Length: 502
Ligand code: TXE
Image (cartoon, rainbow, N blue to C red; front, side, top):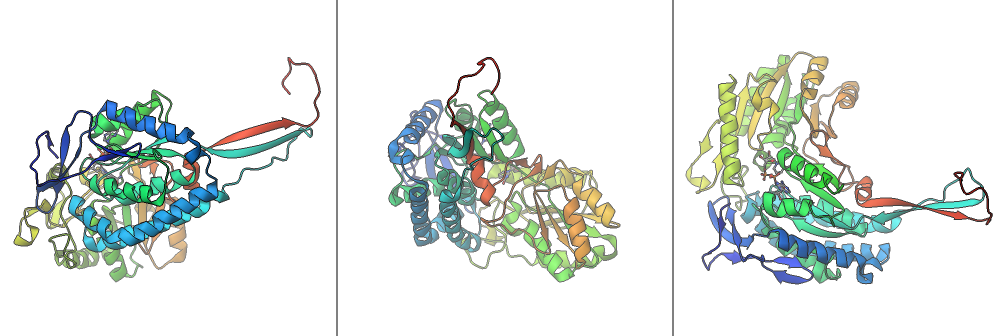
């Protein structure tokens, strides 16, 4: 990402949506958006600053108070979300192509993934009018007391580059169902799909100002948004560093936060597992999406008795993975999305070597003809990794696997939980008792048994420990964007001692 003010005419030009208008940055400045396969800029997006954020938040605040939105029933909000779902299905191929061009994720993954997002809008659209308060069985018989769940106000949705529309949807569907308005700040590395996506909400009939976007750098647009006093909550997906910064910034205004951060997930293969399925799951965990997922199973814990067999199968499988253009349907491993991330992945590989791990596969940048001018790193497997090494403790966010041997169940649990992170874990075993015991012992928000990298609108998702705060997906996700009001009514008017608590 380079910041530029003059742009060649052939770059596609995208604008933000603020108060129903398409706008550029007040400064007139732009940022290039790169295609990771060509290594070249293909579009440009506005580089917003504090004044742009002020306008977008003001629009969202006005919309929150406007009867055009505030006056809708939950059922009506739900129907708007159903329309969005239909529009997503109609246009999903377009968004899949945009996202693949902008962040290099395989078209074979973006195509079904974007279509699947429609289900999030149907699920939360349906949930909108099922959020019920309660009449409380009071201990004070003359009081009639009930609760209501009310929206928070303006939400700042700050998203990452690895799956822009999915990460956005995990926030947008519940927050809109709950009746909030939003200012979206997509990643500066992959904003384009979001800027087109919000058009669907305009077409579906969402009132002006309910959905706004601001593009720009994290330490400019992102920070100004998190610091804005009229933002009620920041819903963030990104790295630990950005997440901590948002948390600190938001604290000044006591703004609420939910954070979906990184991980160093343990994928554990026991010797009683179906090894073909387990190796398949290990590949899915680390080489799918070129390892650029928060749930990457980047630590593969393998029981010593099957270690060599697993490593052999794994290396054979991964070495056959086809790298190439993300738009080709036969490609299995695409480019790294950004140049800084590419450099980071290579630097982590250096740390693996320096700390004494054995490189069993890959271990360097890939520059074959199929890789074009893209930022490619070979699928990499380190063996002989101990859990203290930096490649076992720090998030790589790339196709780099650390294989760590273990003795027995207790040893596996100890190593798996010896991490600052706790987003997800995987367990491969055919022993049901072990599956339950180890699942219970995992310090992670998600545990997959005999599967990996599965998500759904129905299933809560979020991190233990440094992997985050709050939950996305599932019914509880809507409560991230609601606050409870308690209403007290006295049914027998009386006067008493006003100096005592009633
Ligand atoms: O993410 P950032 P980056 C991890 C991965 C990667 C690292 C950095 O390990 O190497 O994070 O990636 C905005 N105030 N993940 O730099 O910076 C930013 O503009 C407000 C994990 O791309 O966290 C973008 O919109 N906003 C991850 C968003 O935060 C700020 C996905 C995420 O950017 C900000 C991607 C600030 N101070 C990377 N700083 C996951 N959990 O899936 C940044 N932003």
